[in-house]
Image 1 (tube, rainbow, N blue to C red):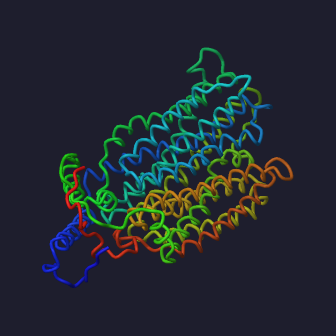
Image 2 (cartoon, helix red, strand yellow):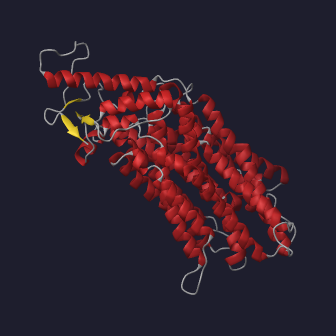
Image 3 (cartoon, helix red, strand yellow):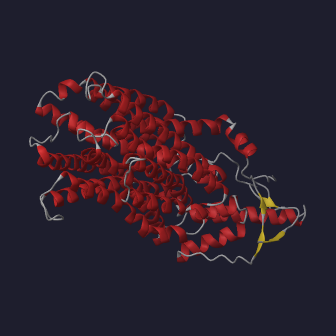
Amino acid sequence: MAEYDKNSSPPSEQGADTRIGYVLDERRRAALAEVDNASFSWFHVKVCMVAGVGFFTDAYDIFAINIASTMLGYVYGKGQKLNTNQDLGVKVATPVGTFVGQLVFGYLADRVGRKRMYGIELIIIIIATFAQAMSGGGHAVSIIGVLVVWRFLMGIGIGGDYPLSAVMTSEFASTRIRGRMMTAVFANQGWGQFCAALVALVVTVAYKNGILNDNPATLEHVDFIWRILIGLGCLPGVVALYFRLTIPETPRFTMDVERNVQQAASDIHNVLTTGQFDRDEDAPVIRVEAPRQSTSDFWSHFGQWQNLKVLIGTSYSWFALDIAFYGLGLNSSIILQTIGFGTPLTKGTRGVYDNLHNICIGNLILSVAGLIPGYWVTFLFIDSWGRKPIQLMGFTALTILFIILGFGYNALTATTAGTNAFVFLYCLANFFQNFGPNTTTFIVPGEVFPTRYRSTAHGISAASGKLGAIVAQVGFAQLRNIGGPNKFVNHILEIFALFMLTGIFSTLLIPETKQRSLEDLSNEDQHGFVREKKRNLVESV
């Protein structure tokens, strides 16, 4: 790769190839500066909306099972509840699929392009979500087994959404608003969780009061409720699919991976001025020489400690965070019932509907009081405070809160006032998860890696998080009943505190990314980053 002295004048005596290479290198940097310094426009809003709808759908589909698993127990479980393995299966299937999807789609987005993969993952989510609502069982296979398969496939699509949406947003964003744009996309998770609980509440009340059924509510009607709850999760994806399939390729991928600087410069101008892009497939292409994605180059780049430590920091921080985030998020109904929050006094079928009603209310409270505000407070401060301070603050606050919740569990849940205090601290933990590492662990991996590995490395970091979610879900299922039903919950909270403490140290490995360009963060010299090919100067595409 040719390099030029930063203070040198344009080479005029070294030959045509060198002069053209210098011009293309300058054009690349000018085009990147145009993206980094662009004013906020309708196109930026469109990117946030198109990516954000995906995260709304992801969160709705993931966390709806938190309520639906209780409904499934009433309909298909022995003693009106799923056994430990059944409950674990329907909850852990999606994180396992997500783990696979993040690695596969992360790699493919760097290999074949963001645009070519964007939308495919949403199609998978739509099909798998609709299939869950239509699932049935038989003599050879139970409905729980069928749901596990479809939720795994849905998880693959959800997994693909993480690196794709993060990278699409970061590569189109201007430097000064990049953090807020990525936060706005990710914040749709909170609304997805809220709407899942809201839909569950509305449908439960409708059947309970006979609005959707002619006969008095029965256990059989709960079978309708969970299918409606799950099935409606595919509607936002259907709405967003067209926009996903028609969004332009990011200029950074066109420049640095496809190595077509002229086309990328044209795309940037068109997108920022008109919001559209036009690509002439018959136009001659001047290819440049630039670092190319390969196994050897990957190991060469991440073989340097300055780059490897960042990948370790983003990956472990996400792993530690998701231990608690999914450990709580997928089991909040169990925790609320365990501490007696809103447990109905009624019995029989009426008691079933009252319990579902209270579970929905509890989840709405957790969303409104902790989850949603946390995202939007991060939105306010992410580009002024920075990612690293917010992540450090969040991990520190969570460590303290989980110590109080875990070691003070028995004292807090012994009285009504203590139970209310427990719920308050629980909401506070949800708040600092989102005004903290849950948001920043999504943002930072979308910023700190070179274009040719940005999606791959984000996928690795996100997959590490889902590994944490799997560990948390399996651990929660196997540990919570030690000593009796839900008797080990306090110690699980103490374990969460330990992982939050380790997250503080992994955060120290990542750089601060606020107000820095993606190229500056890549740890690669951008002067002379590209040069003209010596042969086959003009290629026909």
